[in-house]
Structures are given as structure tokens and as C-alpha cells.
Length: 566
Image (cartoon, rainbow, N blue to C red; front, top):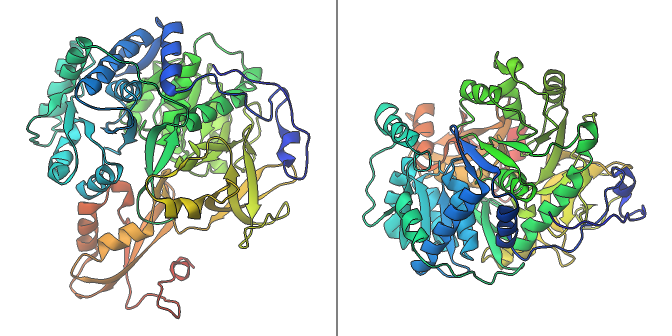
């Protein structure tokens, strides 16, 4: 665990939140103890060798197993010409192969490019080409997507995993069920691909060279829409992520006032590891604390998820409002043993008060809401973990983090006034990958990142989000950008114009609604949805389609989405 310091900053007009900090939590983090995530990993693997690291589908791997297997991945990458700084894509859900691969890539000195496995070929092709990925590790269920774009990318190596690869003898049965019974693996052909198990066996027989990785080297490219609809890679350095980890660890300590800290922490990892929230709060925090992460491959299967939770004694549960709500609406949820639950973390989207109140009533544990973005590694603010009160805010800035509410002229606004939430701290990204223009728009000369969210700060230093400056739509914690949906929609020959907005949705927080001006009067809602489904992953697809004879526009012809929302 990183060293921490215990000094507290005096309360000033520039940091009113300091007075609201939990007792004993310092205002700043200490200098980092590690140069890289690889350093952290190797120390953790040595200290916690015999402890369980990850469990999935009833199979557990220890820290020693994780170390051995990730080292084999690192060695294989090096043997196949991958050098420090090369980008390697990972296209997997929450299965054991995911952390093995991710930590292997980092130990090779390469950069991880996390890919949503549900991406369409168009989305995948953009991300692979933009990042310049030389290799990809993909679960066979999604190999058909890679097949469709491989020839138009710079991929030199394709590694294909199967669901049962790390499940021992049970894996044979799992693969049979996945492939033959449930038919979850569409036909694919990737000549020259390497099976994941071959990577492990070949890597184990090779020689590993430990790379020299510094804090400023790039660890991850986390793709996000940023401030426009063009997907961009948030460049996250080892220092960014290690800093956020140190910040979260300081913030975590007061949680153990309510319940004593157990010897071994168990985390529920239902959020996808390719998402920045789970990457940092589950994988990295689990690593640094010697914790045990229980991976949930398909959290949409709520009955199956509840059944899994009934078997466990768990302590930390990161999730989204929609997930909490869905779980509580399952009749068997009340049968779960919550006696060990110390911390429920809500992020990715706003936690609704009725959901928070019901969760506390059913589990005995309040939801501590936090806030962040891919660009902030991700956590920037959080409510106190020792509090039983749901504040309805995104909480206080973490140690070494500053929040400034700014007006249109980029000047700081007084407490209580609504403006753009700007963030400065060691967890703020280095910039957008190979997009200096976008970086300059997002990060000012003073180092403050413009979040695009509008809010105000209370006299006690808590920030409340009231709206989004951007037209971004937030579906189950995922950013959806209207530009992207509209660009896809208007490629249909029957569509003249299109505009997308977010509308309230009880299941996903928001859903996409598309307004369409027809070119072809025979065009139907089903036609529009089918067309969008070909190029957009599920959560980006319009749930509602409304036909209009014209769309509201400004005097220069810009479509006014705000008028469609009113």
C-alpha cells in the first residue's frame, strides 16, 4: 500500500471541503511508493501469494497463479516483438483471462487498450486504428467482430481465448455449453491466430526481460467520447492510476470505523473491467489491499447474479444505480447475507435517492456516491465512507484534488453558483491520445480539466451536479454521444436528418431517443432501429424513434437539441 501522510490543510476560500474531511484523512497523498503498476503488482504478488486474487464461475486463482500466468503473457508478448509502449487491445468480459492478460501487458511494458466486447465492427475498427494496437486478446464469442475488421487495421497478432481456458476440467464442459448448447460463439475465422492457452504455455517456456517503466509512461488508453462524438483515448499514465489508487485508499480508511477491517477484503466485481470504474476500484484496489475480487461475467443475468451473491461473504460492492435497482427487485435478494458489507460505492451515473434509501434499508449499508470520468482515472470526488447519510451530491474532492466551479469566462464562481465543474489533481489524464487540439480544449494552462458537467459547491465543500454542458447521454453509466448516433442514422438512404437526445429511463437512467426527418415516407421505426443496430453497440441504439417534418434549428442552421428536450 502506498505510504500516506497525515497532515491536514487549513480551510481557505479555495478549499472549503477541507473542514468536511473525515478525522485523520490528510488533504494530500504522499509521494508514490511505486514507479509503475508492474512494481505494485510484483510487490503485491509476493506479499499475498497464497491469497485468492480472482474468482469466476467457481474457479479461484491465487496471487501466485496470477503472477505466474501474467508473466507468461508478458514473456510471450516480448518474444513476439512487442516492445515497451506498444499498444495491446483487450476485448473480454469479466473472466479470469482478463486480469491475467491486462497485468501481463503491463508487465511487458506495453499499453493496455480496453475494448468493449459488444462493439460493432465500425466501433472496433476506429479504436484499433486510432490506438495503433499491434495485438488483440479477444474472447472467442467476439472473434467474429475482429475477423470483419482485421484486414483494415495494423494488428499483427490475434490471441483468442475461450470461456473455459482457466477453469480446469470444468472448462471443457463450460466451452461445450457456451458453444453448442447456448450457441454464444458465432462462426469466425482468423488465420494465424494464437489460442490463449498456447500463449500461456509458450510464455512459460520463454525468458522474460523486466522493462524499465516510469511513472510518466502510458499504462492505459481508455476510450471515451470526451467533449465531442469522436471516440478518443484518454491517455492514463502509471502515475495517474497509482495516484488515484492512493487517493481512494486514504478515503477508504474511515469506512472501517463502522465495521472493523477484515483480514481479507472481498470485492464484488460486476462492473466490466474494461470500464475505468471497475479497473481502478476493483482490479487495482484489490491488488494493493491483497483483496479478493469475485468476477461476474454477466451481471444482466440478475437471478444468476443473486444466486452467486448468496454463496459469498463480501465487503465492498461497487455498482451503478441501475444495477442496485435491478438487484433489489429480485425476490431472492433479501436472502443474501449482508453482514459483511462495509462499503457500497455508487458511480458511473447519478444514484437516485429512493434507490439509495431502499438499498440501506435492505442491506444495512448506505451507498456512498462518487464522481469521476475516464479522464480522471476515474475518481475525483466521493462522499464520506464513514457516513450513514445519503447527501444527493457527488461528495468532496479526494486528497490532492481540487474542484473549481467556473463560469463561461473561465473564472471561478462563488459557492452556490452553477458553473462547469473543473478538476485538477494527479489523477487527471496526460491528454487525449494524439489529439493535442482536443487536449488543449479539455485541459487549461492551469491544469484544470473541464468536465462538461454543470454543478455548484455548497459551503461545506460538497458538489452537486445539476446538468450537463455537453449533449452527452448517460446510459447505465456509459457515455453516449448524439453526434455518433446521428452520423450513423443519416447514412440510411431514407433519412434526411436526425437528432438524438437522452430521455429519462427507469432502468438505465437515460435512454436514447432519435428524432428523424424522413426522405422516404415509407421508412418505419423498425427500419431505423435495425439500421442503427448494425453500427452501434446495444446501449447506444435508439430506444425511441419519433418522426418529425422538420427539426428545430438556430439561425445558422445548427440543430437545437435543447429545443427537442423541452
